[in-house]
Image (cartoon, rainbow, N blue to C red; front, side, top):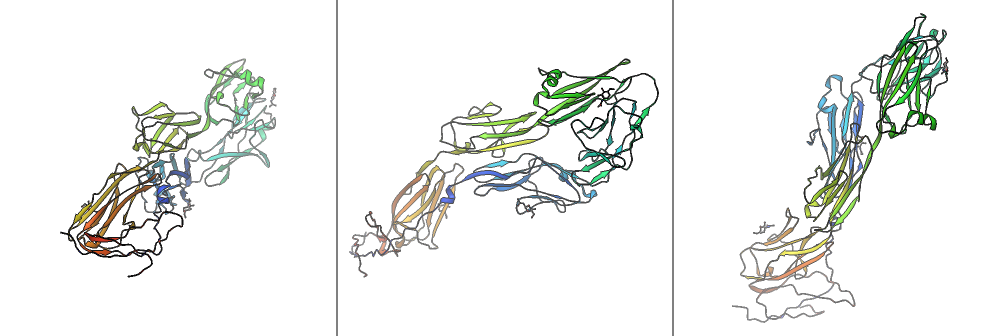
Length: 563
Ligand SMILES: *[C@@H]1O[C@H](CO)[C@@H](O)[C@H](O)[C@H]1NC(C)=O
Ligand SMILES: *[C@@H]1O[C@H](CO)[C@@H](O)[C@H](O)[C@H]1NC(C)=O
Ligand SMILES: *[C@@H]1O[C@H](CO)[C@@H](O)[C@H](O)[C@H]1NC(C)=O
């Protein structure tokens, strides 16, 4: 049974202002990238403490988290370690007895995550050093008249890593600084020892002190003791004797190298350098001939070490009494760097993507690929074409996110990240509510769901206007694990005035999809309040009269007349 009365209703359009559904910040996402990536090594004194920064850009702003050696998120530890409000990691100054291996001598990483994905920093090796006084000590080497002598400055092993010998003092006031070649008599090596050439009786009268510098405390300490060359007066014949026959040196490509070959011998020996470097065509003779290297009375000098110098160098010391060999194992290193290209790529579902990590630096040990902070799982679809090349075929939704290549050797690690975006897919409605006609009283639920990339959002309208605010009406919206959005409008205890043309509109920057159907509630005709409307001259203007009640027989629209 319907209403038989004929009602004349009037709608009064005055000014039309349609609410804009602004979702710009919702749409323009950007994966995280480090604006401050923590350094690979953090050393500090226990009494100073330290702060390690980690910050990242992205939209939405990434969330920073610190992980421990086992990749577990860390928390603050009273009086030891704190994660600050700005995401920096703060190590509080501590007393020697409060040293904790798990906190102060460990490896950390920081991660940056947002809705796009997650990236992880390179390893941060943390070394807190407990302050201890140290005493450098000058040794008293022996030598024959006319021979070369190496004077060493011994640094206690507990600080050796942080202390360098900066100069030598020949008393009372002659300073000797490190150089490639020395002054012909005194040569302070880049490694800190003092080489004295062709010693004379007067050299044996001189006294030497070494000066050292601690890079963390900035303390400069001069040896308390003095060293002196012990001249061997005896005329006996001695074959070459070398105390340390083997040494390992690590050097950055481009840096100079100075190695002294010094033997205790009588008569004065001759020194000859050669190399036995694997598949290296460049002999020492060639290096000398081209001027890349020179030798000076047993001292080998290379002004700029290159990658090919990696390997073993030998110094053969010979006199009439015998021969001895001194071996230097040279490891040439170069800072690691990695860079994934392209940094951002957009790929449509079903298509393919390639990620190439350009790497440099040596020695090189490993390249590991990560996806959103975890190890990248490879298979038939995600393939490792080489260590440095990932090929993804038939792209699916889960492939989107942040990819990283992490390059590591024994000395350092570095990383680069890239974002894989899915091509835009216009919203599509997967589920639509249907027209319903009902009596007042019960509850009603209207549902729409939509897919698309980026995930659309759903907005609701009734008769072209946003839904009215009332406590019987609830709008709910959530995104499923597949990235589809589901939205409900639930109205409890429906009244006839709730009737109308309901519309769900799924929108993203890729487009809009909408659906509308009528909800009819039996009852007297009713006109909802209309906001001000505005129309653009010359454009089509549509107006739907926000009427409720059912059944309605006639609707009149009138202009400029208030009933
Ligand atoms: C974070 O805060 C600490 C303490 O206020 C400060 O030392 C550090 O520089 C800050 N880091 C950044 C990245 O702003
Ligand atoms: C030391 O003396 C030898 C000769 O005995 C000489 O060939 C050599 O150049 C001298 N070394 C230096 C550094 O002056
Ligand atoms: C609306 O009703 C549906 C179906 O009864 C329910 O699944 C949903 O959670 C409700 N939503 C809200 C916001 O109440």
